[in-house]
Length: 110
Length: 115
Image (cartoon, rainbow over all chains, first blue to last red):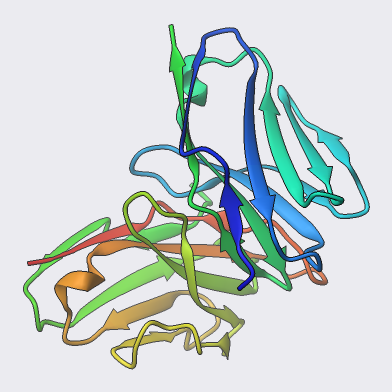
């Protein structure tokens, strides 16, 4: 079936380095994607979104890249900080039906 | 705080008991969603409302699960005859529906433990 998933379950980076979190999706009809951050004991928090008519979108310290050819999504975090430590989910949103992947746990080492 | 709120934050119950969770969405949001999240997994969609109408409920996990949003504001999720497998985080989210897409704002969740 169709699914949204992530390549790696964990990622560890040094404070100040850039982080890249990847996501693969299989539904070629998907046209909207969102990255969420979830800290322990909290609900998911919106980071950035991208529509399928775009291949790149930038926010504050974050960039999302979309490669529709290979159905791949990535989240880049610049100058990673300890406060970025969390689980990151990509989600496919079709008519407000949000489907999440399993998540990647990002750990930032001081 | 004008975000999504959920109560209680934690619930411990014995197997076979009924539980009810409440979600208060952001006030101007017309859509409200319920998700379940188990450890190490992403949220799993259960159901959603537009105002008081429940537009999708086929993905509720069993007939023991039901949800209401009687006045189009707060919502409740009830689980009857709880089972140990129901132990999870139950998340609520809301948004103002605009076309096909829109960021959903999540509450902090209710963590259910069934003994």
